Image (cartoon, rainbow, N blue to C red; front, top):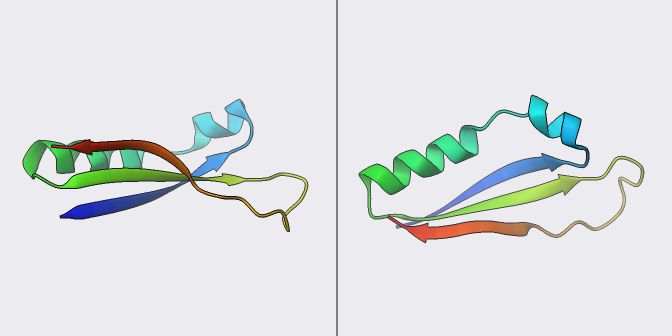
Length: 64
């Protein structure tokens, strides 16, 4: 099984502190209890230019 977990990554550090860590918790639980391949995808949210194309960044891939 292959699981993609999308996450929003704000531009500034103080905004990242306010974001929850559900993606990390879900990835940890899946790795611990299953043999799923987990991939967390972070999407950056630009502050100034909303029309800018933003590609996802691969954060981690692991097989549990």
